[in-house]
Image 1: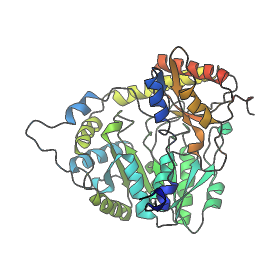
Image 2: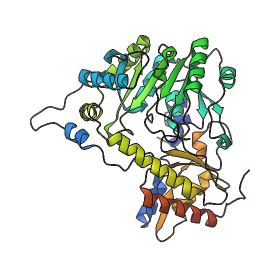
Image 3: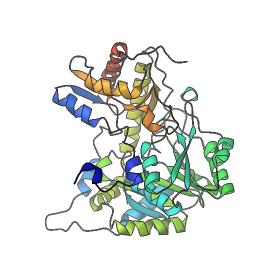
Image 4: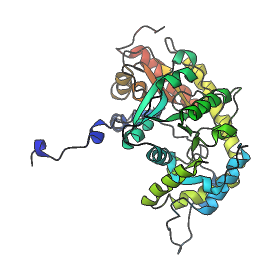
Length: 409
């Protein structure tokens, strides 16, 4: 059979974008094979050891069976999560029936979109945005509409008027990430309340990705949108163990909502995939029931890393880097002609003393044509010494890069 006569791909398959976070992996592998050491600032994988209690509980004894859990998750784990959420001061008490355990936060977002969107419906989100939002929306047959934010003002959330102008008869939801991956912005209680009021006015669902809820620095404080009483009947909260407990590979997330109809639909989708990971739930139960000092210590460590990154980037001429308020990412503008070419060049052509650095190119975090061309996302997931070295390498690379441009204003 010739290539021209192969069965065609779906439009969805043809249009699916590659992840800006992972698409340079072949170049990174080739660089490693050439003997280079790579400092990975491209992906949000914490380097902090997973809590011992998590690892001890995420296992079975010899002779036991690793069985399915219920499709909605282990009842004991949902009970533990409900106690955890209520300890945060939710305006409306969360019960185990308000929770669906998912295979990572990703599945929670996807199931929510499947539950509320028909083909052709629209979801609004600020840009730059976590690229998988675009993929999940595409998979659900919907369209992701973006509202621009500006690096010059710290990627502040668009105004209620801007959100309102973007709403059409096809709009079904507003999707926020707070604190934000990829920008590091933290949205205030007042800003969230304005979005909630807009959703209530236009009969929209607010999907709030709170995976990085604990990672808040400076004068901000951690919060959940469900602390707002008026948010209860319009909001779905997305959460995960991945970052809070440095357990990305456990693949345990959840969606939380007082919207019984959304939970019911999402649970029926979950029945088709049978079960979220059983061992991850067992480990997660130990972590959330007795977190000890782990989470607070992790936040302190990432606050130090945030400060180190800011200090080192400030030394680089032509680099624009707003202060990160939360999560462990920072969208940064570099004096380069193309972030895509620069990030590839770092892996294919640049090295200093056998080392280089890997970043995520900015355009993949945008939907607007031409946006983010000189930006990169930096994940400050390395300890202080390697983080300083990584930024030193970035500075050396910017001086050597043939496509360097004058600083933008």
